[in-house]
Length: 467
Image (cartoon, rainbow, N blue to C red; front, side, top):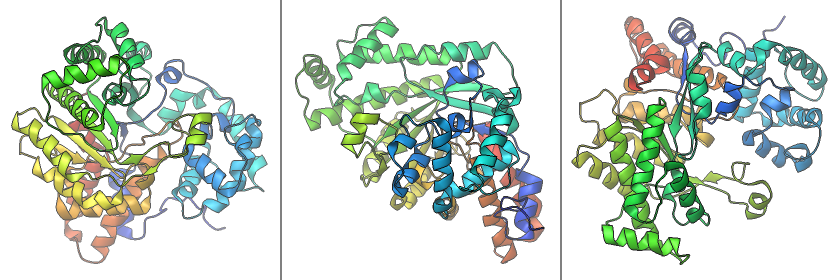
């Protein structure tokens, strides 16, 4: 009998890779320090109706693949039944070969449901029935799914307006997985957004501080940072096209926000100045609170205006952008560092052309005060696949210290996405095992290399974040 597609040594091409994975990485707990899981569903321990409910709804990776194959939107985000949507995804899966979706799909079916059959049109009905039966049991609720993958901590992402009521509820319970949050203030930064003044009104209401000037905006944001901190938050995240860094004066900033609040158009130069000032204020405040700051840079979002109008953001119409990154990022980090206000920082790039830029940039600001203080994050979004992660780890190894790397995160909205940690760990172990096999790393140092694998898989993140 042939072994299943997802087997014990999947992606492990040498005995050294197998040893590294099985002895040093496989059983490490998961710290997923950045994702977009809905905390309400965790707090209420949502039970899922079927495999579409937990696996396809909200997954823009799958949606893009289905659209490319010619599947009608009715069977993706439309009013088709959940079973019809699943059957259309099953039809799509064989066409995803060489896309990471093919590996993820079968790893997720295997790890959560014990299904080793390949998903396609022929197997779809059987797999629908098996998953339906399992999802009816208590162990397949949100919390049950998190416990199945040995998750130790998951960190969701919330806007400054969030009350954090569900995190407060979760803080009173102990179901075996710690749940925290990250502060995501993009809407307070991006002044050119059409709804910016409405957002400031909401921020003023939730903070109790009317936002009428730059200083009151800072006061309102600080109020929300304090609220998040009091509720266990220890990190933030920003999803920006690039870092903003322009010179500005306080009088300019007050004039710009007054102009925006009065309904007048703000110039591109004013936008850059204002966004630079808000970002600097935020990052200096993060340093004061001892947080970790994250920057996800380089996405070109909402490219399809027609579909954005119909479906809204985060529905699969984004791509890699080619924004200049190095100069402004360097100036920004340097300004914070010069004032000794640069906190622990993780930078992610979406354009692989920026790999070496990021790998070398972090070395400019690792000052010996903290191990791996400034990090280059794992392959993100379009790059969290075998080739993208391998290139990221190679560049980091060549130009920095991969031994200090805080490793993988899901950045996902799906409760079935956690095998991506396993995927990353297998790729890491295969990369190192292959070099041992070729004599590029000493097999006599297997225990040390194994420790490095354990650190990247778990311990570096455990020690880096203060939860």
